[in-house]
Amino acid sequence: MSGINSTRPRHLGAVLALLAFAQMIIAIDYNIVFVSLPEIGDKLGFGAQDLQWVVSAYAVAFGGFLLLGGRATDLFGRKRMFVLGLFLYAASSLAGGLAEDPWLLIAARAVQGLGGAFLAPATLSLVTTLFAEGAERNRALSVWGGAGGSGMVLGSILGGLLTDAFGWPSVFYVNVLLAGAAMFVAMSLLPDDKPQAGGGFDLPGAITGTVASTLFVFALVQGPEAGWGSAQVLAALGVAVLTFALFLVIESRSAAPMVPLRLFGNRNLSTGAGITFLFMATFGALAYFLTQYWQTVQGYSAWTTGFAFVLPSGSVLIGTIVGGKWATKFGVRNTLFIGLTMGLVGTVVLALTLGQDASYGVIAPSLFVLSLGQGIVFTTMFAAATTGVEAADQGIGSGIATTGQQIGGAVGLAVLIAIANASGGGETKDLGELMDGVTTATWAIAVGIALTFLVVLNFKKPASGDHVDPAESEPVAGTAEPVQASRTA
Image (tube, rainbow, N blue to C red; front, top):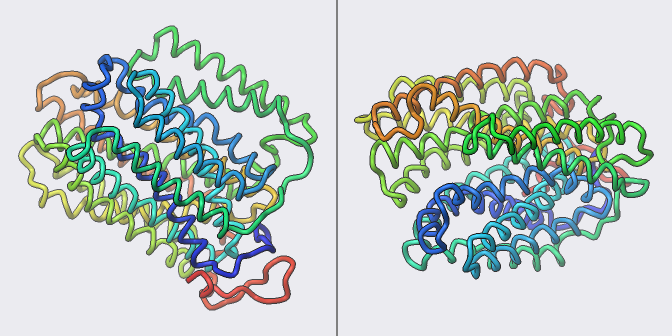
């Protein structure tokens, strides 16, 4: 069976808990800093134009180095890159909490993003190689995805609680404890693994691929702030395109490419990367506009806004669990269609019910439905993208899928902000115009979700792993014993 590691640990439940915990750390770190941004800007003396880089430095490094992180996972071992990613998270979080100048904090956030670029593909590839394709993997991915949903909830709540009680450095120090603990557990719990990919390290491909990705994400992040016609954005995009073209030439001729171009012949992986792109460009961008709506239009405090996200984030958590079960029962394609339908209906109803005077209770049903669909799609799109990818390529395969996710988030947010600004929701302080911008962006998100249906049609029918009986056993490469789905528990 492709993608299954023959050195499976006995305590798979404990291993899955650790991998889910790592995913939760990534999700917490993504959300926890938002609530503390005003205090960070005030205490460290950030300029109005520079504060965004507390968030952007993380996003640029994360998105830019994902392909390198994914290939390093295959070349140097999943356990090694998993531990390295956690170490970078812990060390940079400590440096961030101790920072006394803006540039030090921005540098620390960039290293956090680098840690995420190694940790995310290592975590996902460990899930997809230690758990058998089909029912077992679907269940594992639902737990892994559920941890991400719970991390979003915890990040929002902890950000407000820690900032109010202990000050902004505490939102960084908490990551030192979480990542440090996970790192030490991983060293003894995860099985020792050998590099899966053959050949040497593709240094020219690594340099050009990373430069192209980093500059492209930088341009997307900086575009809304500096202007799409600004010299820095146009230069970054131009160099990114040229470097990417050079990267493709290098990869096509390399004996051991960083990103084997043959992987894009796997229809599930290439389609899955497209789904992760659109997922973050739509579902993933909605949180930004909900924050604007609650804090600016309706006057919620940061603390209250954190709790307002409990319902949608909790619904995402439920959806990830349901998605894993439904992917096994109904098939990957069908489950994606179900999740997207729920997301589309919920987003349309939300757009119809949003208003300056709308109570939380009025929009709560639509938030529940769309977030439930979001969780279902999240689990299922990764199950689909990793189907049929060989063990030696699971790291870079995970990196490709996750790169689509990160770049999709940057592209989607940039486009939606432009749409919202064009409809009157730019820097204006008029709440009515801002409300119009939020509503228009929500309608645009609904259109994007509808377009995702067309991409899902490209998945194989039936996709490998569809309609797998949960009780059905699957052989593990190198063993004579079947692997039961119940062993994930």
